[in-house]
Image 1: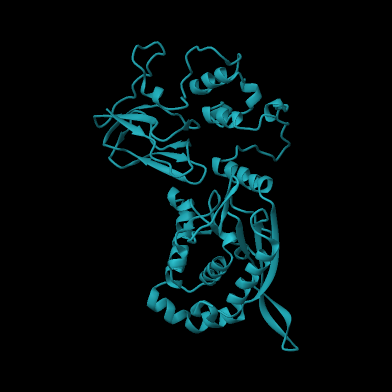
Image 2: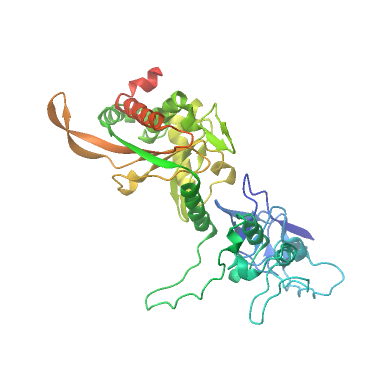
Length: 411
């Protein structure tokens, strides 16, 4: 018998939700064949069969929350067999499902909160933890497990709230009746995380945004002149994003507070630039990180960004590629946005927003000319970045884009 285990989930990811089983108990599987999809706070992870055989049992149903190393099920020898019946609760040896946390099977009787008639039981780990902490499922509210069951993670999150939080009314009123044409769909784990982190950024950081506008004429002319030879030599198209990455790197070196983060009462300065590039995926916005971007050339940056975009659409980004960023660039212009205020990606202290290029009448040398202009925005944490630094940073980005020769000469 071979156990199907939850793989390591990456930095800062402590649990995942069983999103979908691709195989059923009793089905034959080949080695490395995808068995189950796990949804984390960041990406969807496929778990492959560790060996060939037959799925004997599924220990974690869809919707269950599991941690790294937890048992999802077992594979036995053979080429096909009927699924084995589930072991009774009073069996002397623990079933494999007992290693998964929380379990999809009903917990055994234990002191503490129990389900009322008509309610689904919560996981045994959650029940035990609630009993020890002296809290009830009603205080915690709807859980993140299957059918709203409270998981161990829900209890820990509830206990981690400020002391005043439990005193607040926790009772959740009945859901309103849907009108004709409405449907209720549970938020995905990724969407819940996006919502929580964005609200966390607003509540935690002293977030401000400063704006400027950039004449894109010089970059567009340079790109037009060299795009063919660039693509022929490097096998990748020359886009605008590499210019902005390079421009931000130069500005971050001059204003290191924008590349730093706050931890407690200390500031952590970074002697590198791990550039986050916001890209749209099927489940929402994700931010893969271009590690050591300050050591990469234009072609390397363009190739990496193109690869990120493709794999984000395919849902193939790796967990380790979504962590560790020190600064982020987001381009709402590809969707037609003319101006916006990007929200920080904690614990980062700065994020640059690019926007749509639009021709506008501008005064150049005392004459009105039609120029390709772009609004740019820098949202920053005022706790660590002063207004003067933020404005100067954005001006430096503007200067680097309007005269890209500065990037080549490192001035």
